[in-house]
Length: 168
Picture 1 (spheres, rainbow, N blue to C red):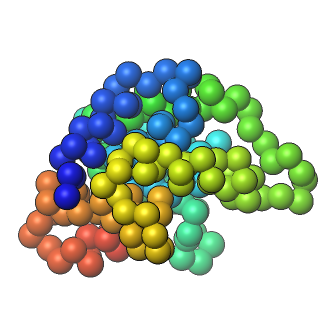
Picture 2: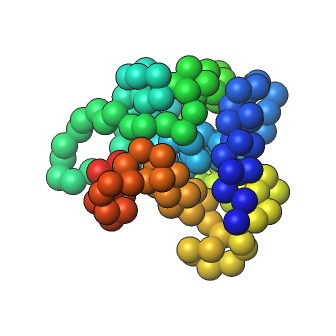
Picture 3: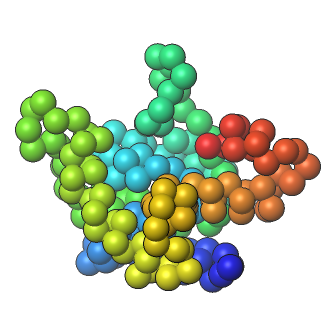
């Protein structure tokens, strides 16, 4: 119900991003404006570089079709410079994160380190996001919010399902 407010809060958080900000504040805001998964945002293996004024090249997609390793250009809901500044702040805050245990994957390590606090902070940052089941109150819901914004702003001439497939 408060989509504009959610987006403006995220952009504002990213514009004034500092290393003293809580991880979830940075992570959730980055997720909303980019449509990336929590692991993709927090992973030091993910890279982002400017493509256009409102887009970045992204490398490090979590779920791939086959073994394809490629870079994607993704549209952002804020300027690329604001997004890249906030990613830089997040990476500086993280330092050189590596899994604590050699057998643990980055995905497991990221979920252990950031998952719980990010899920809890979601409702503090955006109370309109309902608590509850998988589709009503989880961090993954931000991907749907992002896709809806992109559909509305950039690509409303195609089907939303095609857009989800193309952009996410």
